[in-house]
Length: 365
Image 1 (spheres, rainbow, N blue to C red):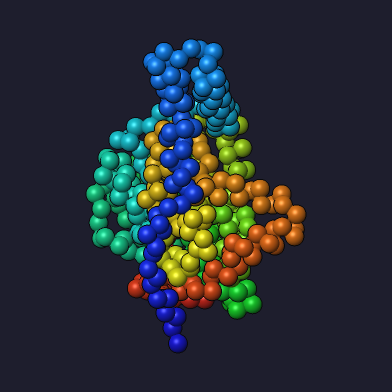
Image 2: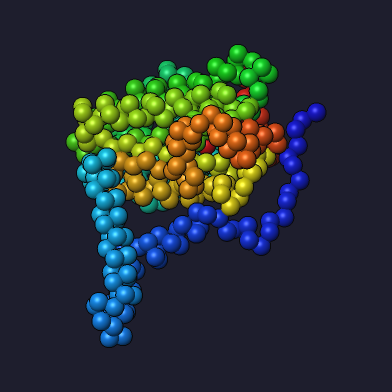
């Protein structure tokens, strides 16, 4: 009997309220240097003396926030170096898994903004054609197909300057229920394909005087793992390690190439259809448009970056520091190992199940 999607649940009136929204409001108000300095200026406009306690407290707070902001700028400069100059009219962007989901959103945005975009996917594009976007049917797990399509892109569009490794698959089964074909397909798509595309597109990008940008889509699951995601978690952990090591190599050998690592939580795409977040306040489901905004901002600025969405994803590395007992308690409270019990994948959301090696669910992240 095929899996069916769980019945829809009515959201409460406060469902849009999340810790991420609260932090965003605070960052643009009390924790923003400009706003912080307005407070002592307002006190001064009321003829308050400089040595008055409220004035001293507000100045101390504004100074602290300003120093934190400066420290953040210095930290980013040390970690990621100077940005490169980006001219979208001269950029050729390659997006794997760009026929739907986040990949398609990025392709459409850059296509409309005048960049040249090449989408690599085994599935046809959901909207048929998009302005400025050229579709190439390609299985990124086949290095020969990747090489062939790379030659076609070079001939049709020019030398790629931006590579976005976005393709992903989810099997969603316990390890003991997975076939060897499913395991191989999952690891090939989620991990090995990154090696194939990097080895294919990086050499030309490295020779480009204007440099280039490599964007890697990983996941918080690569850090914490989860039941029914053994293959996916292993691949995403490998992707994160691959990106960090590659960034270290490029920093020494090709400093003009920028690297962007994206580590999102659960995305509201068919890839994880049916999976419910255990806590919408602390662990909200991420909309693709929110991730796309951050990725586009990093690419446009020409800087390297480490993007983690939502808020808990920025601190997920501290999970490994906790004692094993606290980790077990945190997993139980978060429900990370039971979330996949309602998983139905793209097949349950109106899409088609891709037949082949082990009948895996294929969808762009």
